[in-house]
Image 1 (cartoon, rainbow, N blue to C red):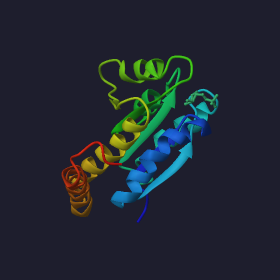
Image 2: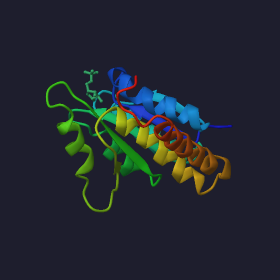
Image 3: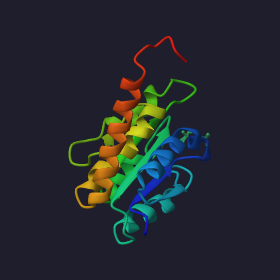
Length: 163
Ligand code: RP5
């Protein structure tokens, strides 16, 4: 199946965060592609990627970036596909810079902004699968099964002292 999710990030250095989104998409069976697309270092590629995403069959874009994190917002400006932004935890400001750069979009150009770092990457993938689940029943069931496994794992061993 062709990629339904475009998983993009501003730098190779973001992969250690966004690989958690990739692993989650893998576990749910969501077809996706991965690219480094930098708002600042490859602005023409960003425009081309975002402008062509819908025609190429992508249905959701997950964009992760850190620091002056313009990637998700600029992608959202060039496509009507849903864009989910993952703030990468920066060294200088612990990701607060990334979060504020991504979340404070002007009215009219939405970016669905997730938590800073690993949790945000995982949840971006889950949210992408939930959105796709409106159209693809198998993905809806994959999300339901993920939730059930998660619940079972907690209930199976409620004593936090055991490793
Ligand atoms: C952003 O600048 C990237 O998303 C990355 O989080 C940050 C630092 O990039 P590198 O200098 O590590 O390539 O554009």
